[in-house]
Image 1 (tube, one colour):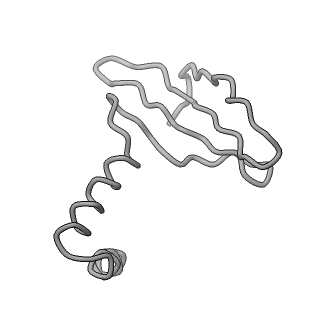
Image 2: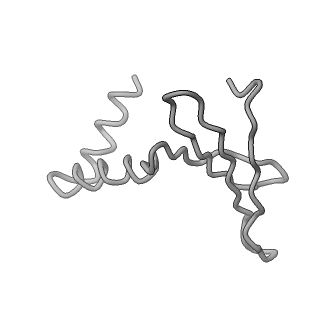
Image 3: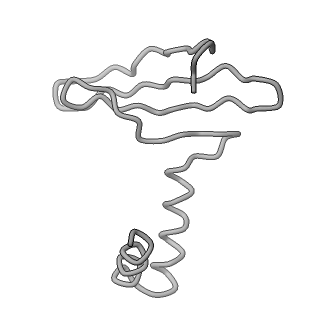
Length: 88
């Protein structure tokens, strides 16, 4: 997917012994394709992707907003039920 693309790893935010290290990895945009920014979290000595941002839209914030709507209209239990049904 990222073959032949320039990736830019930005410096991690300062961390302490108790906090995980955060970082961002962004792809160089191609013709008519927006750049993708991957937000990374260092845990157990490994980097893990926890969010993808495309055109300033965060997948984490998007899901959070959807979950908040379901919870405000019904309940947390209903959200869990809906997620279990979608997961199969």
